[in-house]
Amino acid sequence: MLSLIGCCSLAWLMTSCLSTIKAELASLTGEYVAVLSETDAGAMDGRASAVRLEESIPSLWARLLGRDGDTVFKADLPSSSVRFDWTTKYDLKVTCSPCDRNKIRLQRTAWRAVTIAYGIDSDSHK
Image (cartoon, rainbow, N blue to C red; front, side, top):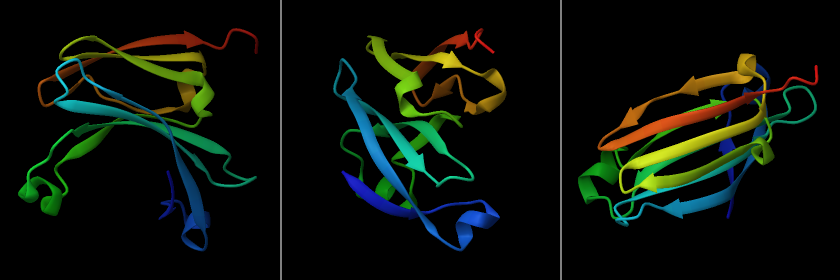
């Protein structure tokens, strides 16, 4: 699924960038979905990845108010460095490898009933 979205930096305001969903995985209960997307902002800003949690079947009000999901992880890294898996019905494990900690922009530990744990493998080759 491809979609064009407006991006947030000043350079991006003059253009749009391409965001691609790379992976989706429903929770063990089917109540939530984790979505990995990658945004390509071009040569100057490179790629950014995000993990978003969403309700599988949001209410009409949640959708209208934009409360049917939220981003829990963002990094200025390609999506090939980010993986996730549901370890229990309400526990999500996000793994980033190789991962430069300085490129992580958001790392939430909870959203609604979901607890998020992280495995960050620093890029030791630099």
